[in-house]
Image (cartoon, rainbow, N blue to C red; front, side, top):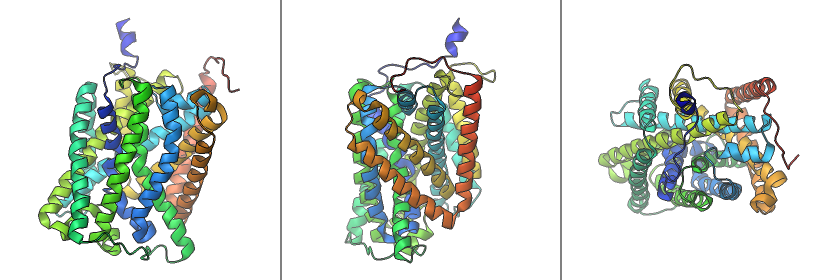
Length: 449
């Protein structure tokens, strides 16, 4: 009996506050969003990259509408997995898109881990191509794993402390960077070397917007805290909007701070650690140390928050009987098992993929899943959650435009990553079709048939 209980997922009701949920959300969002993506976005769209952050914010705000409506109606530890199930039932559609979100979140934590390694090496003047980058990233994942084995209050406490330090430090960097530069003027006519024609410039801006969305998408991790958050029917939605609002201000500040202190060529050259590079001309060597330590704190907090959220999502999918699961002889709850699987998968990605390709796969998976959420609201749940038709419709159109632009950029610059993403999605789809065919779920009455 006791052993059977151990194999269930356990969620501690009211163990997470609104502040804690915001800290977890911004932890994932801010973690790598500005520390590694700034340079990659500049490479795609030139000096327009601060505007690409704002463009991404517009897309995300339309997207957030559906999640806020869903979370207010169905607060759950499964978050997105539960929303998809409400819309599509216990089907391959639900399982496939839930796993796309799961993998995009694991990719995000690997992105954070490698960013941690990249910035840490700047303290010692070691090139970011060193094998120490994945080694340090793997070490961070293991430490975050140990922290996530503890109680929610400790996870919330660590994430909150790191979150306050990080947000304060990044805001300070942005303000001081602009003040030292003496201006917030940016030459928006300077295009990326990869976007010399007007068509390429438009596609590059859309591609950079896609990467900007990756910097905001961490808000979805908040939806996985519904079973543990105090007053979840109100606070999940609040936490989402507060997190997005904070990030809009911070990303805008930092984008202009970097653009005011580095030339476009310098931003692209140092794309994996552009904030550290921008700190040097603005404030000298001590500022580089400050920025690097800030990046280490931000990415560490992000990994802790990401593992917390993503392992809960996989546990919920397991409870729904939508994914295969094996205990492999491990004791403890399913939630602890999914924590182990999530960290192992994150370690593999951190060791074998570079930052650019990790980011590309993450945004492709996320946008496809995001469109499924909005279609589910539009087609099946609109009346139930009290949503207006216009918002999910616009969100789908914006997602399609951004995904098309990003895929076009990658066809011309890195078709291999599109091939890998396509193969992974095909494997997920086939595995789920076979699993659900051999492990059918007893159908329940579904009003959206």
